[in-house]
Length: 337
Image 1 (cartoon, rainbow, N blue to C red):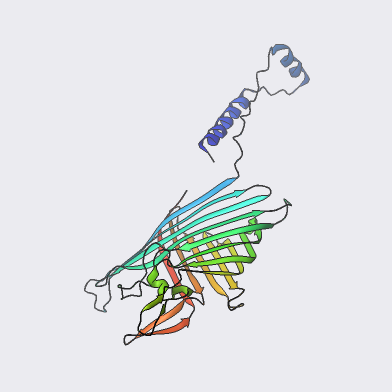
Image 2 (cartoon, rainbow, N blue to C red; image 1 turned 135 degrees about the vertical axis):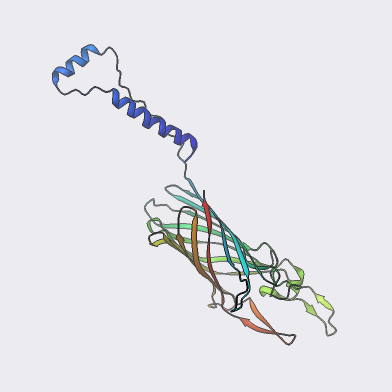
């Protein structure tokens, strides 16, 4: 609500209270006649302020900082002092009228951990943009004809610690883009939506040539001759066409405990159709007070294009695609605006 709208509402309430205090209560016919004779002009005119132009935009922005720390001094049982910090943000801007919806979201996360005797390490890194436009011909229907755009990458290099010489990921290496059309079911009372797209283009970008040459994240790797001389560089992008299904729900399951669940499923038509890539995020937020909140949850990922590389005795072993799991537990300060 704009400041101008707030001013008009306050002005209207004050004027109404003043106006009602001046109105003479007429309880009989005689009073009515007297009032008509003595009143030379209307004295109790209520002026209603015109509302501002109706806005169909709504926004909800949340910024938070989570910190966890453990310290030991002469602790007989042993242990390593450590401190972990996470900065997170979720910015939403939504448009809705009788026939259209347009949802836009920016998600950022960046976390660091410092342990005694160990270098600073990254624990979380995400930069995501989600945008969905929907149109319906019936103002009472919950189904929309929709188009969706998702973009996902990271801020800084990622490493397989303790090796910090050779990054396994970089900004825009990888970066994922989903662009498609389909139908979306939106049920506002339960904060639930389900998006079904039979035609979605998925583009995987690996803009670092070293990672592209190694075939990271499913791109076509470089070709070398028998002597190790480069014949052709690795491709820095990969394009797929397939089916995308996403669902989101946000629900208060107990007093001051909110559950947010997001599931993304994708399968490619041409490459191993039926082999499903999964990105499942589930978090619970506990409100302590207006600014302090705790959160716990997990992020499960399976992508057949992401191989797990294990190193034993200096030899790298490709173990293929595996389920990836990240668990999060934090308490911190949160500001919503």
